[in-house]
Amino acid sequence: CARAGVAKVIHFSAMGVDRAQPSSFSATKYAGDQALMALDLDWIILRPSVVLGRPVFGASALFRGLASLPVLPSMPDTGR
Image (cartoon, rainbow, N blue to C red; front, side, top):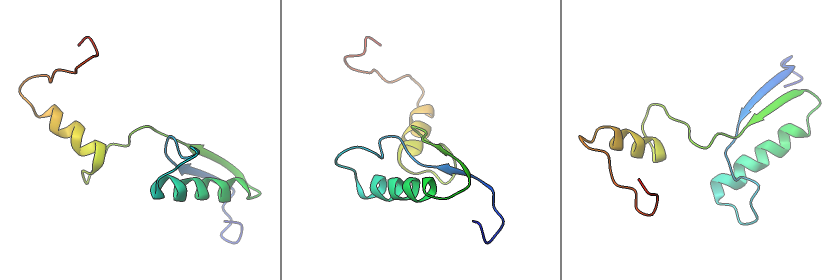
């Protein structure tokens, strides 16, 4: 960042990356968080719960699939 003249960084991480038993995905996200925090520049780390967009993968695919249903699905044990 310093060689490129970057003074501010916005990093998209993920919720739960600092848990005791992380997944490979979480471990690499957390390593990126730690590396960024060690740099001498202005940074912010965002940890959204879900990122929606194209192409459709993971939770994004689930939400798009649910949205296309002609009825709302029942959610057990939620009162809804």
